[in-house]
Amino acid sequence: MKQAIISHNKHWKQKYENLFYRDVVEKLVKKINLKHIQVLTGIRRSGKSSIFKILINYLIDNNINPLTILYINLDDPFFSEIWQDSKKLYDLITSSESITGKKIKYLFLDEIQNVNNWEKFIKVSYDNETFKKIFITGSNAKLLEGEFASLISGRYLKEIIYPLSFKEVLRLNNINSYLDLLDNKAKVLSIIEEMMEYGSFFEVLKEKEFKRDILLNYLESIIYKDCIMNNNIRDAKFFKNFVQLVLSNISNLYSYNSLAKALNSNENTVKAYLSYLQEAFLIYEINNFSFSLKNQIKSKKKSYTIDNGLAAQTSFRFSSDKGKLFENLVFSELKKRNYEIYFYNEKYECDFLVKDDKLKAIQVAYELNDFNFEREIRSLINLPFEAEKYLITFNQEKIYEDIKIVPFYEFFK
Image 1 (cartoon, rainbow, N blue to C red):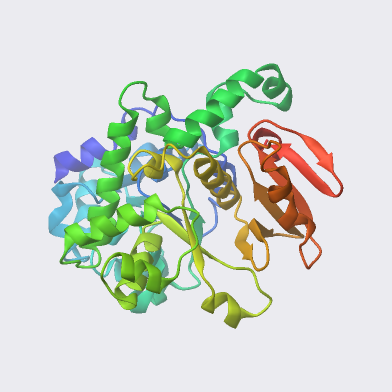
Image 2: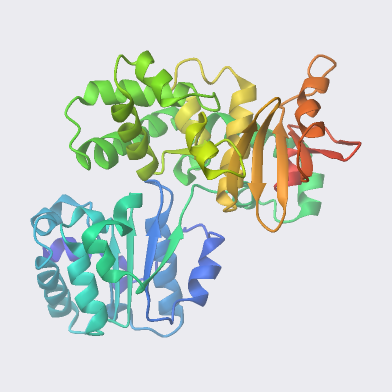
């Protein structure tokens, strides 16, 4: 175990290098001196571990002794004996302090959900002020739910980590301002096309040849570790077929009954399986907008995935449909901005209604032409309530009545 601990804590000798500075880090740094436990959740491989390393570098830069900072990734099989007994986390701390000769003040625990009853250890450590600050991550939305998670209620601050946003991808490509964007418009459009096909996981963006292989590996890991194992799913093959069906029908209307029929299953199984995918942050189910909560619950649903690559490279014939890919990319960017998102489907259909300080109605069309223009604007014109109206395109721009037709890069710049 001591050798594994040393291998996880390279910062004891030198700071971490070649890390991409995420936008969320600024927010996390502002809260770093608060006593509250800092929780990072989000889809597997979204960059939670790298953000930990950036925060560790920040602490070192601010005169914190690196030997008082402990980082452990609990996905590592070296720590498997801890998984069934959270009390052994104390042994981990003791072993670390015996190596460094220093008391651990800052504790970073990655993928904490692997440890049974981890909340008890965290609560006692927090209440006893064993550490100056505790940071934890988990790849499942249920991390902070349930009987034991209630133990740390009111003691933590949560941040959801997503794959890179469009603005971060631009910055990764040295496009750091709106002027840079306009000067490199052809490159920006190429970046958007790439994101439509391969999404925005950091490792995938940096890879030239094996993007699809990496995405397939990510999806397999999410399905197996975060869904099948976490929920004791017995029929793994059936569940994988279910995931394939959902990812192949991104943006399509469905009811639980229609999905059940397509799979020769039942509504309860469909609801449970969809909840597992949402808990793993793989898909997000959205409701038809209504001022009546009852109507929202009863109406048909739509689902989108947080990363285009997970659908475009793994689902049946999905990648050939640019319209759906583009719509999913718009959804993922809206989600990364923490909008509350609905769709509208009454007499006419509007792709997204989002709420912040104002209600925004957003229609999405990869390309506008003589055949689809009227159809795309009709639902915006006929909305039965007040909203700011946008039609997001790949690369077309104009004003039509009270509708702003804007390119993707303008809306999300």
